[in-house]
Length: 100
Image 1 (cartoon, rainbow, N blue to C red):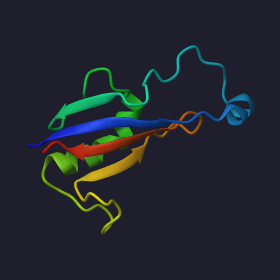
Image 2 (image 1 turned 180 degrees about the vertical axis):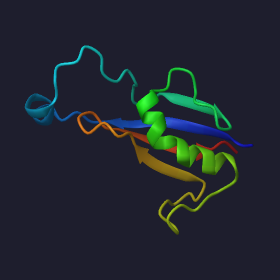
Image 3 (image 1 turned 30 degrees about the vertical axis):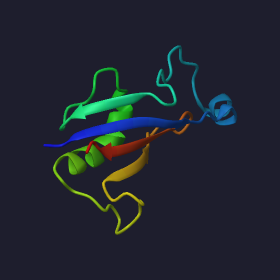
């Protein structure tokens, strides 16, 4: 099984939506832009957000097992994917790549 690199590429925050719809929470995302995680095959890396893992894990699993070329040429590098977490208030974009 291949090692997979996950890089935090961008964090967004929509304060207008948070103010209008979200109940106050004490703890939000701790991930930092540029932060890198290495997956040993299918295992979630330590410190990686559980909710974000739900969004990226199908792509990690596919790449770890040798799959590539998602959506018929979507990515310039066929052994990669750009996936965002499912937090509509604070989405984080991740570059997922096979470690060569």
